[in-house]
Length: 627
Ligand SMILES: CCCCCCCCCCCCCCC/C=C/C(=O)SCCNC(=O)CCNC(=O)[C@H](O)C(C)(C)COP(=O)(O)OP(=O)(O)OC[C@H]1O[C@@H](n2cnc3c(N)ncnc32)[C@H](O)[C@@H]1OP(=O)(O)O
Ligand SMILES: Cc1cc2nc3c(=O)[nH]c(=O)nc-3n(C[C@H](O)[C@H](O)[C@H](O)COP(=O)(O)OP(=O)(O)OC[C@H]3O[C@@H](n4cnc5c(N)ncnc54)[C@H](O)[C@@H]3O)c2cc1C
Image (cartoon, rainbow, N blue to C red; front, side, top):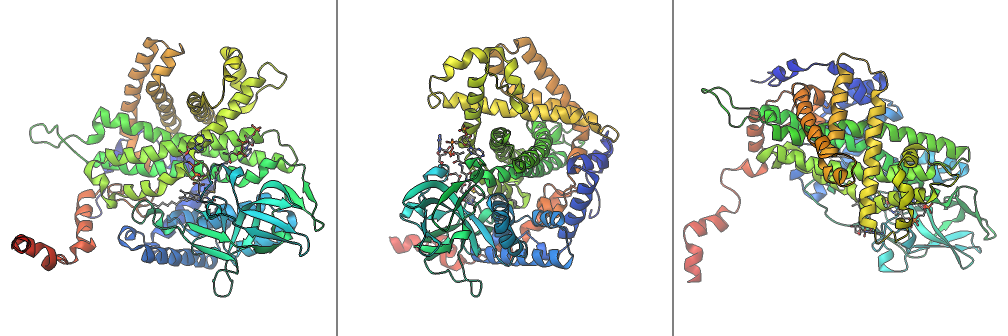
């Protein structure tokens, strides 16, 4: 049955132009072209093979990641790929690595917090990978509370240097990706001390390892923090520990866009807000939102294709059993996730626009939209990563027992993805930031400062005006409710941006109609899930709730014939999906059967350890010996 498309009958049912939807998903014809070309290039190159990750030891796994990163770099250089193509290549190689932090945080931190001069010095080295950087902020004792970091950077005017020091065990840097075994440099965050006075946390470029033999420089103790959740998964990354023992760096290695220290030991603050020291996190949170739709769509693609292949019960007169995708319960779990994948794709696009807009304004010294950008990136990062991590696990369950096999791709995807709920800001901590922003807005309602952008709706919510006295009851006391309010606010953004997307012209037969169905599913599913809140606040009546439920059922029926085409529109190669259950041709069973025999445990019919442990048991030798 090799070469047969087992999902062809499903593909024939679809009512829209899948190729046009692929362009909508990618964002533009150009983005589609790049993505399509590079994903196929990676998939066809045996150097990027990844199906053996779960069976390798940590050392083998890590060395293999180093090999792949070097091979990816060679490919990028040999083929003269553009920055966009290179980023896509790293994405489709699909293996967390030190390069994520080098390109994703180290370089952006220098760009965002370095002066022109610093950028000119460091960026060319970093772009050519003549130095490899990481982002060393978190410590053993403090991650969320950045102001609580203990590492110190004390200015020594005698030598025009900073002395970077870890005064306590808890001040050891702990977690930075790429730090453990690879990075030659770090952006290390430390409390700035000038003339005995403290000036808050700032970033410093610190060389960690020799560029000759990779050994740690004087005063640096560095290593890996150990195995993390799951086999393979995020263990390809060398998250590290780092201690500084009075390490000296030149003064001009303090990132000086936000504040400066002169050679005379004078501390100066620029006109830009201090919060720009946190700017790299805003940037990365925005990219994490865009990534969420990739991870969720990947899981949904696997679960949808497999649900169309898998049959259980319902055979009539010896005919085929029912495809599990036809069960309403399966649809009610799967289709809201499919809708979420599309919703997150569009919110990711919008957030990218918002970030570009705020960056442009910052360059023109307009800081007015920074609080909103912070709230949106923090809140949407929290919402989308929580929903995606939960969604991947739901997809595993939707695939029944086979979803638990590594060859389904779902266990590894979950293990790799789930720390996204913690890194770049714990999701609850981030929602508290959104709540703080919302409460600040509420407290200003009625003043001359009118809320705009994503909070413009607040002026239209009458009862918020009366809530103000309640808010003063204490933020901490009400934090549980405030976090719920923050989630609701973020969901409102997601829904409204999905609706705005539909107001644009969307070419392709039936494409807009499909997106309308998905948008309605996303919104009505939320209403259904939180109907208690909507009913108790009088926003809807029980009749509305029942209608919403009926409408959802009808929407699921409309998605059903298009489900396979809607996941085909993600345009994922089998290599990227990394899942037998999700393979394009749906030829699941022979592939599962074949894969089982390739497991190292099946290399011999009689396992290692038989003579030592099984035979003595069977022969009752163990019991005899004990008696
Ligand atoms: C199967 C294989 C798959 C393979 C897939 C591979 C792809 C995967 C690759 C993914 C790569 C991802 C790599 C991840 C690497 C992770 C890196 C990290 O985690 S780096 C460390 C990140 N750390 C954090 O995020 C820490 C979180 N904490 C904070 O951000 C802050 O400390 C805080 C905001 C929680 C509190 O800060 P504090 O100064 O105490 O703030 P206040 O609450 O007092 O607020 C003061 C004021 O500032 C405003 N504010 C706060 N933050 C910001 C900001 N970032 N930007 C702008 N403004 C900010 C805040 O609102 C307050 O404003 P005010 O007007 O006073 O109310
Ligand atoms: C895989 C991975 C990669 C990482 N990579 C990097 C990296 O490259 N560079 C780097 O610097 N860091 C990195 N980190 C660290 C990461 O940024 C932190 O772990 C994260 O910010 C959470 O901080 P924490 O560990 O201190 O959590 P904690 O703050 O200790 O959280 C523990 C619990 O306390 C709760 N909590 C904390 N504060 C509050 C509060 N104010 N109110 C209510 N509840 C609260 C949280 O919700 C959570 O439930 C990485 C972490 C992981 C897991």
